[in-house]
Picture 1: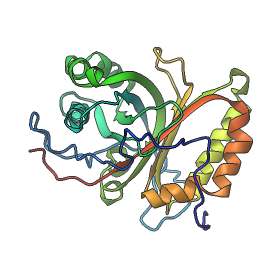
Picture 2: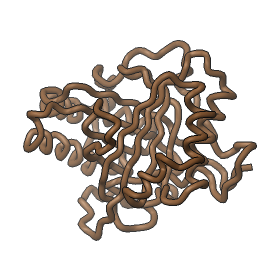
Picture 3: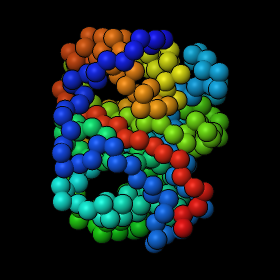
Picture 4: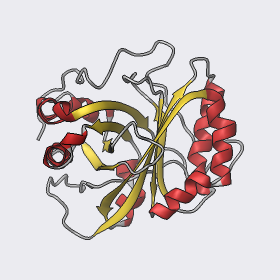
Length: 287
């Protein structure tokens, strides 16, 4: 387990902060004046690894359920106002109440500038691939994109992948105390074609094992092969939910993590982009 004090995050993940973006501004998306929903943002995404309350670092070998993960990264315009930004995030978050199949959502502004200058991340979980496909053509979602996202953004990328999670309500729907707080870490990767097979599997498995060994820092981990036909930029997506910003900094600053990235990922990667955003508790009702 990672027991050392954290050092600076690996240079290949983060660049200096953009002065036009407040690095620690968080959004409470549970107070949209336009739309009502039965619950707040505590129903979020979920993942492959679920740590127990005792932080037992063993792999859960029980029954698994397939889920389909959706990642969107946005590049907001520099002159976007706080009101416009909140409006955009409110509507994106509220899509889960306007269509079937979305079981969890988290979103927010990137805490640090990344190498591709994406400013916001959106993460959703779907019950089936059919639900995900319907999401892309849903009239409400298309209206949200056209009226509340694209007017404020000049770039957008989507990655979708299949993963497995523990077949239990709490990890599937990201319900419970463990998901009220934390940091969502999103990593998109384009692996070299000649790495598909053992090198790629070894890299991803090594990262997964490290997350399993550190349940005191990490709540969930998922990864998978991107099957979105409109995105050729990235071959894989990874999402890690950390328990806190401190847990995120300890993990990404550890020698174990840096060694895995340097020895197993960097030699087989063509391109990567990473960002993280804070997840805060909200009330149980949108006013």
